[in-house]
Structure formats: structure tokens, C-alpha cells
Image (cartoon, rainbow, N blue to C red; front, side):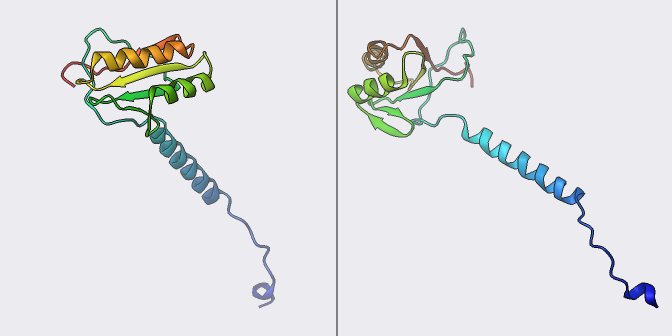
Length: 131
């Protein structure tokens, strides 16, 4: 009878807590990986059979068929784009994601703005043929 009346020392089960922490860690890693790709103007990229995969860029510039320039879901003018690129510095790499129907003159204007800001690493986003 005395055995049941004794106070037992409380134990903290650590294994379920570790399981929960690993689950949360995996959950946040997966959410972060889905947030990393830059979002831009929804457009159909031109295809290229000789395209190479580049390292992830720091800035993705979207160029739609109407000539609108977008960076991080903000519409910019060429002057604003140049100012943004100058703020980021000359070591910044840029990828231009132009729509398939975008005018060549708009693409050249964006590339000129990049070059005037001192950016030397400029890539053009494409898709694989048939994709």
C-alpha cells in the first residue's frame, strides 16, 4: 500500500520531442526551398537546344511581350532598373527572363541598362525544346 502512495519522479520523454523537432526542421526546409525560385512575369520563354544551366542568379529581370520590366513582382522603368542594379554592385549576376514574343529592342535596352550599371554577368533564360 505504501508503494502506491509514494511520489514518483516525473520523467520527460525526449524521443517524441526530437521527432517533432526533426519534422519541423524538414517542414521549414521544404517551405524555404519552394520560396527560393524568383517569381517574375508569367510568360512563355523561348526555347534553346544549346542552353546551359547557370548558377543561381541574384536578380531575375522579367520582360514581357509589351516591354514591361519586372523585378521581384515590381514593374520598373529602365532608369529604376539601372539604379537598382547600381545599388547591388558590379558583382551581381543577372538573368533576363524575356517572353518569347518580347521585342528584340526591349531586350537590348535591358541589356544596355545592365551594362551601364557595370554588370558583366548577364544570362538569358530559356526552356528546353518541347518543354
